Image (cartoon, rainbow, N blue to C red; front, side):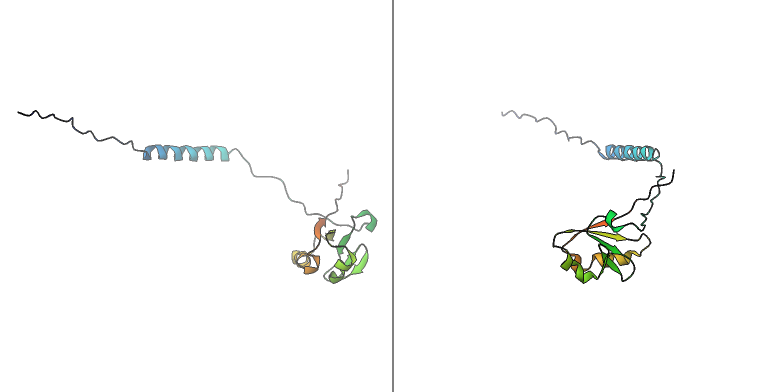
Length: 133
């Protein structure tokens, strides 16, 4: 007679439920951001727009393109049109641009978008006014 061996019953593996751990992590992150966000305050600094004044042209960086109004430009104090700027300066030069603080932004953007200024590195110039003691 043949002896049959009985195999032990198969035990199903118990898989832990990870949803509870995920919920705990999410809640801890929410508490962390709530706690750390309440410690910071809104910035109290205000932005002050630069001011321009009439200065002798010798005190400004050279070459400087001064935007005087909607149509008038001057390069180092001499009246110029935007098309004449590349002829007066070498390609690859640094061109400083000075514009009034109350000038419309579209004026500066249109000037900087002009193809005549493509060969130049443009640097905006502002004039710092010291506050009276």
